[in-house]
Amino acid sequence: MNAGYSVKVLLFGAAADRAGTRETQVHAGETTLDELWPILAEQYPDLSPMRDTLAFALNGEYARWDARVSPGDEVAVLPPVSGG
Amino acid sequence: MAIVEGPIDVGGLISAAQRPDCGAISTFVGTTRVDENNGASVEHLEYEAYKPMADRKLEEIGAEIEERWDVREVSIVHRIGRVEPGEASVAIVVASPRRGPAFEASRYAIERIKQVVPIWKREVWSDGYIWVGSQVGTRTFTR
Image (cartoon, rainbow over all chains, first blue to last red; front, side, top):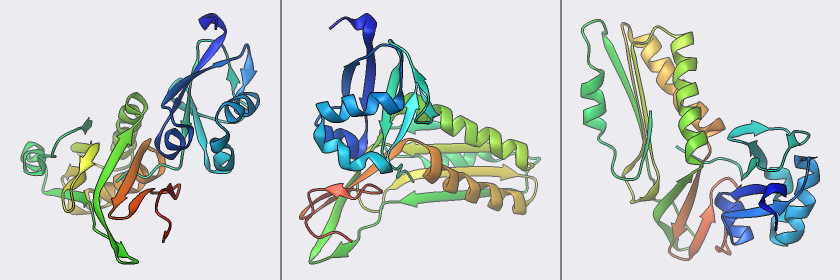
């Protein structure tokens, strides 16, 4: 895989549990989170049922589903937070 | 603001917040609670964080508090990793000239933490585990 055309994806909490990994690369050019999701869900089918509960961060800040993602960005898959 | 992997020194945080221009220090300490159901109980908790983002969110909460209230010190420390029953998982210490802002700001801090800081809690029960908030886990009987 060419690292120049991949997006780093971090997974946390229940999402990491379901995927069985905490970090992966998704091969994608310029895209959006909305378009990235099916690729990720195909790689890790057990994530699919969580979709509506998830939030995303793009380069460390909360991002909407329509946020633009570029190769080299860091996406984080965030289940409902439960700190405290 | 800090995210730490060991015990939180609550007394030290309070001492560090004492200052002559403040008449109130409000402290909130969140501790791990042992719930029980279906003949099982919580044995310990495990917390994880998206640390760079969580650090920044804690700083933002501190800045929000300083904008809204007359406070002179705000400390928030959240623990991650394994936390045993009854131990502190989060401590918030706010010093203000008056008690009202100290109480209000410490309440605000814990509510905001629970809304926006990317930290997750896993309850490890005697019969499995559960990710709090996602209700994903290996327990067959969940609340």
